[in-house]
Image (cartoon, rainbow, N blue to C red; front, side):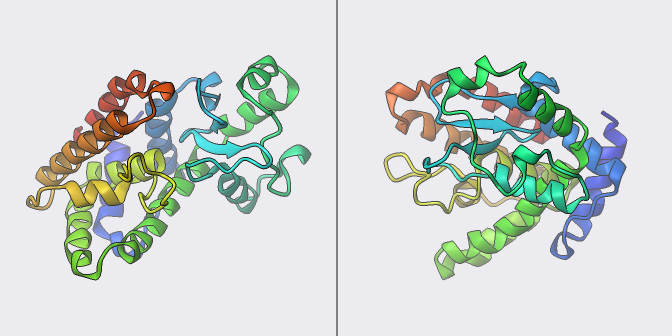
Amino acid sequence: MNKALLCAALLAASSCAHAGIRLTDAEAEAVGRKIWHNESRGSIDGLTHWNKGEDFASLGIGHFIWYKAGERGPFTESFPGLLDALAASGRTLPAWLQGRPPCPWPDRDAFFADFRGPRLSELRALLADTVGVQARYAADRLEAALPKILAAAPASERPALQARFDRVASVPNGVYALMDYVNFKGEGINPAERYNGEGWGLLQVLEGMTDAPAGQASVEAFAKSADAALTRRVANSPPARDEDRWLPGWRKRLLTYLD
């Protein structure tokens, strides 16, 4: 990945955060490949995955969630929105992906039994060829997240949350951190995304931040608060989910926010 290109892209985004994140094709590709590396080390096979103990497939550079028919788990589904973004970009989707279908595999075993089959092979090829579109989808999710986060927070807390967001977004790696985290762990406004009543999304990270000057200090405060939110999630999680196994990788991911 070209770090200079990524920096230029995110610097442009940070300078006009309220005007929206606008990425050129090359910039979107660079940002997307960093997110892809976070999720699956940039592997083609990692573009189609199903974690042990979960009821959904995790697809694309951001491991966007796709539920099977009739399943509405605790986490916000994001893969159908990516299908919309791919179609809007001009890509012709395979027939079996058109019309926002539910995930056709009933469980993890069926998914991996079909891993080298025509559908998942076709899907991996599509996802590997549309990294930039997926990065723009991730950026759009961040843009849409802030108004929803502010609306969900008490009115008295909104100015502080907005200020923290803006201070993190004032530097390139801060914009990347915000983009990656909201796609990684969501907005934090879904009441179902709670363990023992406590969430772990972007809202909770902003709430848990200490106030710091704009720029790198705020990014460090953001990463520290994210670590605390994810550590709390694991402590509150049902033992059967065995979420301890993910925490080291999550912490490694947070370290990329500081680069």
